[in-house]
Length: 313
Figure 1: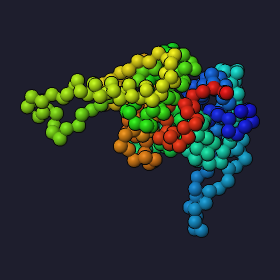
Figure 2: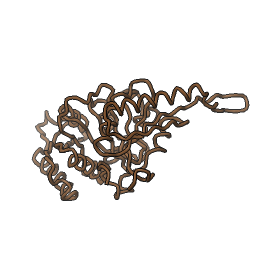
Figure 3: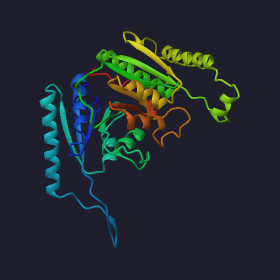
Figure 4: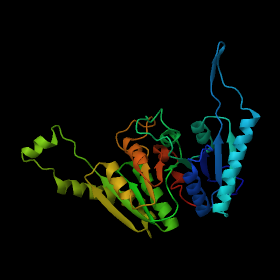
């Protein structure tokens, strides 16, 4: 593919000029230089809807606002070039709200990058921040970079959460593909909780104990089956497996403390597909101190683009 081909994979970064996305800009720029993909820096300039007697209307942006937006984009592009001279940078000023603007710019084989600003614990998946809405609705992977993340101190390790579903196969493939490129190790996390119709304390008092060996065996079979599915995609990658009885989000966040990246799916087993970001994914986004990549549940619609992590062909 040529650089001018609109189908060429790219990295799309959303900025707002506030400075809260500085970490996301640095991470996206490093990815652009590493993969050879162009970096498209997007600033959405939404104008508020004004309700008038004749109905709601959205005024046009003033030349002053447009000029400020262009200056913001120019400064972001200059910073990228200063940090990573080999990165190819494009800028886009879009007259729209941030979420639809970014979704419109990104194709299914691109990578969307945003900062985690606004990921409040009381926000819902639908009415919350741009980050959560993008991760729930995008057709491509979405990387959410914490505001306090720093590029220094690389641990050379990626953590990936799996649950045996078809969607988590795509999550695993993304993590393995990226690890093959940058030489990082991959830690696969599978955890389970046993739901019972009685309070755990009452069961323990009656002498009941969970069938640990059976659960361990089934977890091992599940992970082994997933690696059979991915086949030689794991060749050359240093892979370790963590199986845990902790809640999935706790297990992932514990492993993330010594990692550079966490990869999760937008939906696991049993979710309402396409409406909300899964509870585990949301918890990891809220709690992780490293970038989190969310792989969309729509991945199976475009299997030919997997694992998305590759550089230029």
